[in-house]
Amino acid sequence: MSVLFNHAIRYEWLEQGRNPITLVRQSAQRRSTPSVLEPYEIQRLLSELENPFRVMVLLDVTTGLRRSELFALKWEDIDFCTLSIDIKRSIFLGVVGHCKNETSRQPVPLSLNVAADLWLWKETSRYSGADDWVFASPRRKGKRPLRPDGVLSKIIRAAALRAGIKKRIGWHTFRHTYSTLLKLVGADIKVMQELLRHSSVRCTLDTYTQAIMPAKRAAQAAVVSMILTERPSNANQSCTVLHP
Figure (cartoon, rainbow, N blue to C red):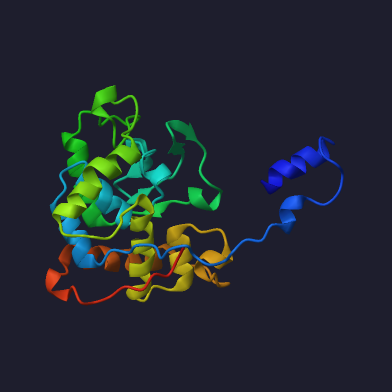
């Protein structure tokens, strides 16, 4: 709204002067606390899902991809040799566009375990060409990716109910969970900031050091190991929400 008013003032559609949006008060408090899944809850959710939805959730919760980035992935974006993902585009309401900002376009490391599951999905998918969508829609004959809202409401939330998870799950739940688990395993704050590809210092308490790829991979591998190997008996361990 601030940009819109600035534009109107610049072209003299409104009276010249101070942007009125600067006078609007905005609360810094959350309306609600974001849901975060425990490792055992992720395991239960994954056990109730079949591919491509299982690998979709696993990929999202171990990379922190935004939903617009997740559904915009093509097979050419995934390098199974270097175990990395290039974020080249985003998709929202069916419209393909650019990523959020330059920081969002940074490569994302891919765990070997998750890469193996992703490769198995590629081998069984009818749409496995370099220019095909990773999560292509069969109804649209692979020409478009699946719809995020439909997958969430019809598949993932239904699976969560079967798994006994009562928390309200949204796509950002997996990103919140990833950041929280990174903190839980003791990841450096700069490594967290770069893994989550935040550009704002306020998002991840940015520091003035440079995180290197081995440190990123070590932190990510710890989260993947927790999700794939930890047993449900550790269900009493709690997670504290770190990020918006």
